[in-house]
Image: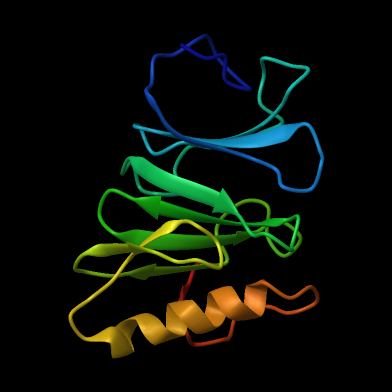
Length: 148
């Protein structure tokens, strides 16, 4: 059970948690109902909550970008990766992309990303993660399905 920003407590399974790597007492939570929440250690209520960002698909992994405090990545149960940049858009992901195949761990971030038999299809994601690892850069336009 958790207390959402609005309404009463609701039951959902927590599938993923990642603490901010920037020394702030905040953490992300990804849930079985597809909701994503940003919490601070001092409160049981989330600072921010996104209920429909994965169209109800369970979040199976999430992680902060290691060098950009407002950027994080989410992987849902249908192999869709969402890129969030809260400075650019705090209501929805700035990009998303579906991938098929096996999962592999990307050493840059440590998050599990889906791989494919044709590794060329994963290159836009790897390029975006590399770009997002450097402050002041944005994801490459056209590399992902933009969400507007």
